Image (cartoon, rainbow, N blue to C red):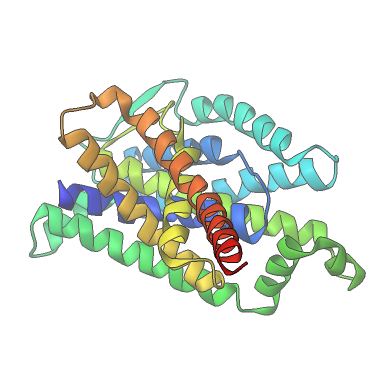
Length: 298
């Protein structure tokens, strides 16, 4: 149970980091995730069927960036509300994903050479250890690249746009292009996660992205509750940690046999709700404590 949760937590940390970029860095409610995740699943699966699993991951990332660009253009050039822009892109991607998968709702990879099967054959470790190693390497690589990027000039512009867009515009920086780039990176990471998951589970499904936004938010919020919000690098690390902890919580909840497996989405939504409530509860308890101290001293 722990190994399985660790594997999934590390792989889904790519999703968590993508959601963190849009949700925290850009401060934008982007709902494109469900469509871009499935787009990554579809692209990776079809390239794996064609015999190119590694190229499939690269193309999944690029396809996700394209989806993010569409959402960004709808927001910045056409003036559509960010939530509606994400919904429109997500809805349109359903048809695109079906077309990529050859008008089929499912694509199997059971007899294909995926990233994991290739590495399992080449490395002198068990299947579970190899999967954990792949998760560690991917999570660490993406985290390192993103942490470096957000400390470059362009990355700082993205952070500034999410923090104070009016100030960025007054500094003669094209805030629309910066926001589009941020959404492209965010959805690229989300689609890359979908591509890895498709090869991990050995199949692609058109409904694979349903509810995936809740998973990403849960990971981000849980990580922030535990590690706090003190900079982008720590935020990315907390997203990875939150993804692993989220999977452990889910595995623990399902292993108790109290909840059947179809309760997964409800458990996920409940975890997010509880995590989002914690800062408010802490603040109210602090205010109540200050009031009690004030009355006592009076």
